[in-house]
Length: 156
Image (cartoon, rainbow, N blue to C red; front, side):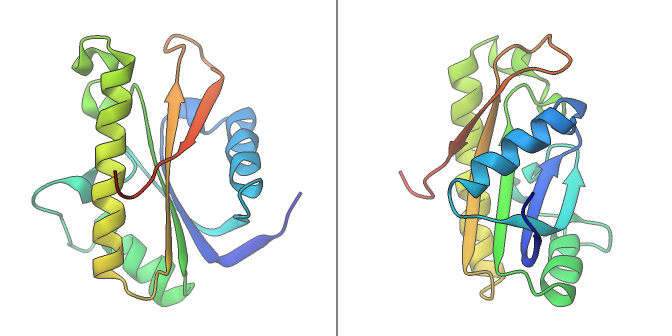
């Protein structure tokens, strides 16, 4: 098991399917094979970074923006930020919000991730690397589904 790196932060959804030991190992292995170590700072929110993709981004005391700024950047001096979004996200209405279309769901998450990555670079110049990761939950009915990971390019 690799050591924690305090300069790496990660934002992930609270969805229990992503927070099993199996899912955490899969994500860690995916990142480590790409040269990204274990995050030393973690933020977990319903919808992950979804609130940062909205037209009007909340920046109050308990917002994700403040969590990233205060805990990750000011306190832990994070320079690499792993941001995740997943398909079948309950905060977005699940797969039903995309009429059951898994590809439309994936594309929506990619759009959100690109938008948030761009904003994070603008808001926090000390963050030199933003790593957008799409987590695809293929079997939406499984309690502990197999997950597919995709490193999303910040530009199309």
